[in-house]
Image 1: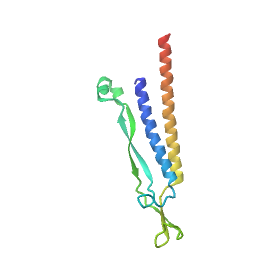
Image 2 (image 1 turned 90 degrees about the horizontal axis):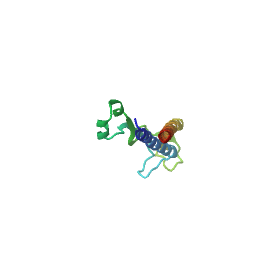
Image 3 (image 1 turned 90 degrees about the vertical axis):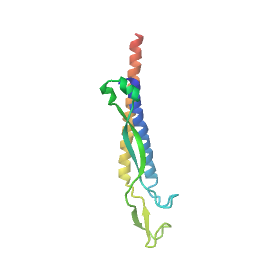
Image 4 (image 1 turned 30 degrees about the horizontal axis):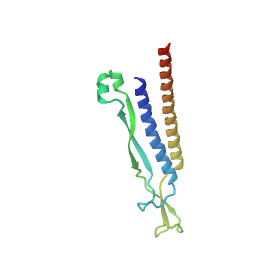
Length: 146
């Protein structure tokens, strides 16, 4: 694997984790949103990711079998969660139904914070690998100068 391919793999991970962190932040920000522009409560979002080729088809034909297996990651979709809403009895709430219940998003703060920490650690790992690649590149340049 060359330096640029290593950077491409790490950059794909950084981009995917940034989308994941933004989605988790949006979930946390809307934890008590009972009415959206669409009319109902906020629906929790999840990120769907999949592996993707880092190399172009031409590059794959020119590289050996080990390098052809290199994969990055990409976000395929941000999907609405299918969890049912939480029904909370609050007859004084402006969005309460006839029985006095309000529909709230089923967002678990602990779960979302764990997701945020996982995404942050993955992002940090990607940034660290980019730094390592830059250091190796600089060392290679120094060896070439000497």
